[in-house]
Length: 238
Ligand code: FPP
Image 1 (cartoon, rainbow, N blue to C red):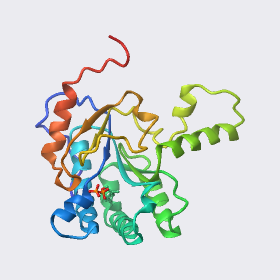
Image 2 (spheres, rainbow, N blue to C red; image 1 turned 180 degrees about the horizontal axis):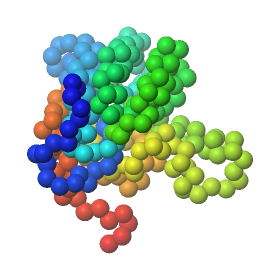
Image 3 (cartoon, rainbow, N blue to C red; image 1 turned 120 degrees about the vertical axis):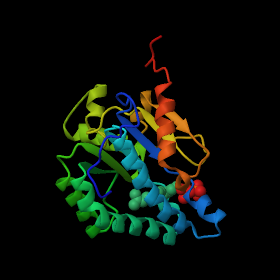
Image 4 (cartoon, rainbow, N blue to C red; image 1 turned 135 degrees about the horizontal axis):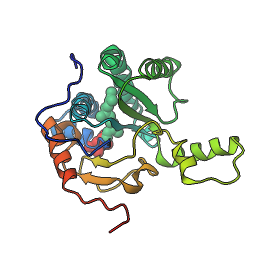
């Protein structure tokens, strides 16, 4: 991402998506097909994440959320967990300045407490330095939808609330800085939500594709947006 993000002229009209989220599934299978270790798939997947994020912003989507590491992913072999966290760490080093200059605001959603001091400090620094930027990239790390709701409820209890309304929860979830979620995309062929953005998904549309995450391209993002434009969202109305 060498230049400032420029809204593309190839897509007509205002983009109806304000917030899009991705479950980036299929890295392991992609690597296996190539007789490579799973970590190779994650490495390629990290590059694809950058391409997809940039395209979303070019299309005028203000907020993106990516499921990088779930609360359940700690169950994976230590070598794989460590490879994903190293990738993230290196990515943050390489991209920090560039992304902040490109008007991207980073928010790390999830429980940061199990990460190393240096990774946590890096995340906090990037969040602070990008706070006034327009585009939002929420990176879900050690994230679980249920634990996010538990976190929000605990905040409310600490504040001494005795009863709450929906807006109270919405104001305390990790993605509170982002617009309402419009669309969740899941690659890799599975048809489930895997504890991702449970509260935010209430009125979101879903897009499932058999494509493996590392095979995703700019063209796929364009197709997803075009597909969304054809949908008739009724939000419970007629
Ligand atoms: C799911 O595929 C993918 C993950 C659990 C990790 C996602 C991480 C990345 C795309 C790297 C992102 C890194 C940065 C720097 C943002 P899987 O391993 O479950 O694939 P499988 O279902 O084929 O086994």
